[in-house]
Image (tube, rainbow, N blue to C red; front, side, top):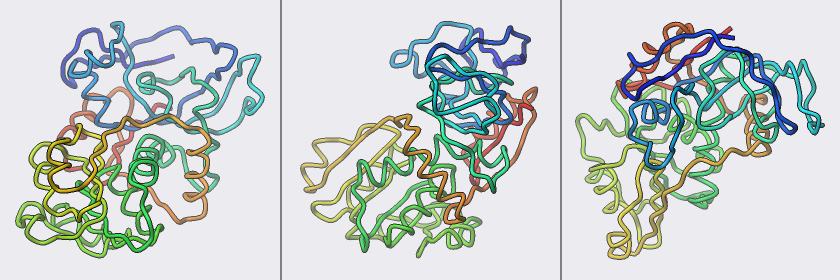
Length: 307
């Protein structure tokens, strides 16, 4: 098999393509012939070494949390999948930038029949993050007003669609070039963060989804109504500030969940959700794909085609 390896923490240039022996699945695992993976911010944060205090890894390692492909072998305790099944999954914190990967069967869902592997690879981490932020942590209800930062990115694009499906009023921050795109996903208003101060244009928000952090998160407290919630997948909200404004702040790490992913896959199958692919790179150019994601101006997902 071929895999991207990281022998020392660094930037995209620290990724190298190598030949490795095929892994073998354990009792509750499956071996996937990976067709595609996607680049997520967690990938380049791990590669940089910024996460090593929280996610200690043995070097060298293969980055990548997403995978879509075909099951080619199963462990003896796996009863839900068989060789030949086409699947997708948030496979773990590493392992996706490879032509083959061993994955816990409980992390996987069957690939939507109407989607190709490239689109399927863009779903798992982004869709699970968006769903868990809005519903598990934000307790989103129909009729509420939601502000989504970085709305045109991988997670933001899914969150806009999910919030719209839930019957919420959706406001997104993004560049002006993404206005029509986000309105097509269900946003009722789009604020150009390069020109306008969202804090001066929005008020009485029930739920803020912070996918940016830093000053954007700090300024978001002022737009929340009392009893509102700020949910961030980037950094822990300030508990003192939350108390001052009478709101709630929540920080979370995305949870692998095959059952939840299966439900989301059905929404893609039905056409209620869609995947936007910004660009596609071959495995040998994974470093370029990571650099593209790090530029932070991606619409939808950057995909790495491994097959």
